[in-house]
Image (cartoon, rainbow, N blue to C red):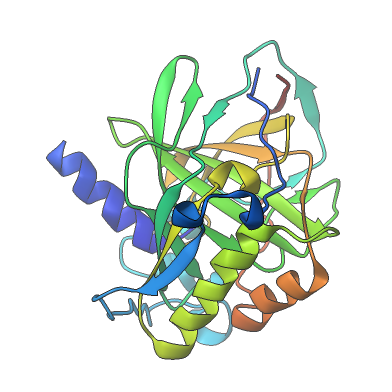
Length: 275
């Protein structure tokens, strides 16, 4: 997960079964005035975090040496993990309430592409508690593994409740049918990366980025980038989301190898939650 978000979450705190989701999207079916569009914003700043990377002398092996990131080295509940041992649970799965006309800023922060909603209306509900979507981003290849299987990419949807506690939904991506919503986002992503500017995508159906009626693997973990803070609730979907091969290729061309290595599961229990 992205350090850029953690800064945002800290600032916010200082100031302050699953519904069926379609994974198909047809821009042609929308009224002309609600078609998804991508435009440049006035903010052309790009965050650069030279203190850590995914290789060499600033790679994952050395993240624990970064100031404030000792958990990357000594933490006992680190993420990602290889999900191989699963326990059935009677707990309710999260309810996902994502809008169909979201506005998102698109920012290449030097480690991944960050998509940030402009409003607080996109939420998940966990045990009757509301968690607001703060941002989402991707890793290629996937960070989590399912039964030691790695996927071409993984999207992390980062949420926070009113106390700043984090819950992250991880969605695996695999090659298959094209996803029109992701196509729109990737158009903006390429523009952002090519121009070093922040772009805004409007009228985005975020519900199309979640597999329909997913089963979740839930465990207690951490951020997957420095500072590797723990006490993060993870909900990794069992079912992957399909993207066309050329869509996955664009994601890899922008960022390849921005995945933290697998961390020990230890004594942690992974629960399977179904809707």
